[in-house]
Image (cartoon, rainbow, N blue to C red; front, side):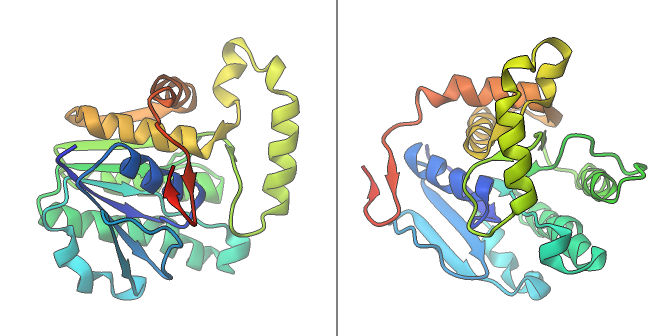
Length: 236
């Protein structure tokens, strides 16, 4: 794949999986902006420790990038306040999109959430909706918004409530059929595979992918995901 990708939120559940998937798919270069270096090592992985409050300083890193994968996200508990939550889940993505658009990036792919709506009474859903609304005005040739349900997978930070919800959703998966299927919990790596699949296809315009569609895209691509990844040894 003769393309360069940038991943924002590469230490998170979906972001880390996206980095691994992009390297497996032999993208020419994978750039990541991180608060702290990743344990991953690869000759096509370029890491930049970033001060997110001064993101404009890193505008040159967006130059020559074909696709930006925005996987930024936190929780209000971790952020400490709604204001800090908005900074990570709204302000950073919109600033990154501004820099990417100025650099001529062709595709911007962002992880949003099921129920995202700028007019929602729910703060989380409203914030995600405002992010989507802002991104839709950015003018990218290809803008892709992914709306997963509850994400499954091992995170670096502890999220007890999410673990409990994930356990319950997993146990109830067999009854999530028909109309309920779109609410099934989904693996972070499935979301990342769907994103990489879409980036490789490079469709133009604005596209929104609900949870059930993400599951299909990720599952279709899973058979081609290649060898396993080991944090110490790299690709196996």
